[in-house]
Length: 68
Image (cartoon, rainbow, N blue to C red):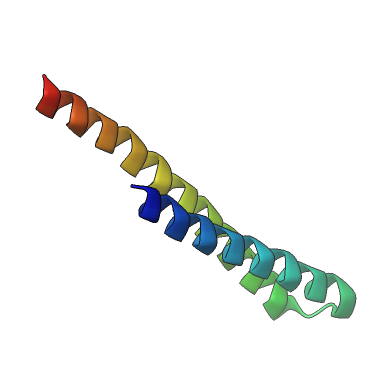
């Protein structure tokens, strides 16, 4: 499970950095396709967080059911 958390953490960090950088480029140069890229990466951040949350919850539920 620790490896899974590290992988998702690295992916999350990369998505956040990419989203912030894309939005900064949009603000600096007023190029709309960079705003869309920032939105897409932001959606990836939320998706990664939801995957992590679901795996944590269902993983603990599965461990509880198996130990019961």
